[in-house]
Length: 362
Image (cartoon, rainbow, N blue to C red):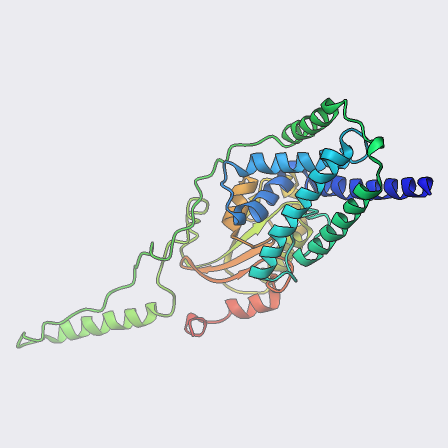
């Protein structure tokens, strides 16, 4: 009987250890700084964490997950500290996920528990956490008090601090160097010709004046076939981005979906007259792959590279790569993103860019 309980206890400990170690390692995939920065922007920023505090919190949190995954396999303060601490952190995670599910629904999106390695919806994560808490409660009951050691507290502190330090070493905090801002809709400039006003109190209007007024009205009529110019906020990267029709892309050099979108744009450009000029903002993740990216895309385009966190901020809240934005005189007419319902659709984009502005503004 004792042997059976011992085997069950070890089985639970191994399962819990695996879950926590996987959770910590997955948050570092595909590369530590990229993965942690993505976790901060997509998970911590929406929760209210500041850009200055989030980098520290994320590394400490992942370090604690890593430490608990290791400490659950040893005997020191197992029942009195390790198991209760593991349950508490699961309760905190579950509470947050429950609130998120109630507010936003839990059937879609990635909760971030296993990073981008194993996407999981909030509801799936809640179920996983509840099962883990039940297993930990069972473990607490079946482990004898006599099997716990309480003479080596340094084991807990050493493993915990070493795990946290490891995170800061493999993913050093980098300063956010970006002055990139997206202008608000109010920051617009109008360059259309204003309709002339005629003083009706004047007794005589010359034929020359009538002709000039008619000409001005005709120009105004032509100008309304395109949107009023405004500042998109991207001019610091591409000086002519707010002039005419443009295709602005947000890509990651190593992203397969981004490469597919770039290739589709290239093929469409070859068969379309007056194609909206393509410009790319690349995330500074595997930037050395940019030449290979263009080779696969079939053409090279003007591009700029920005750091990971500024890139996610510029891409937009709750948006994902690849991002393709259709701009006309700085006005955003369409924004594709991610690989789900709003993903880039080359056929839809083809129809869109072939439409006159009079149809787009309806």
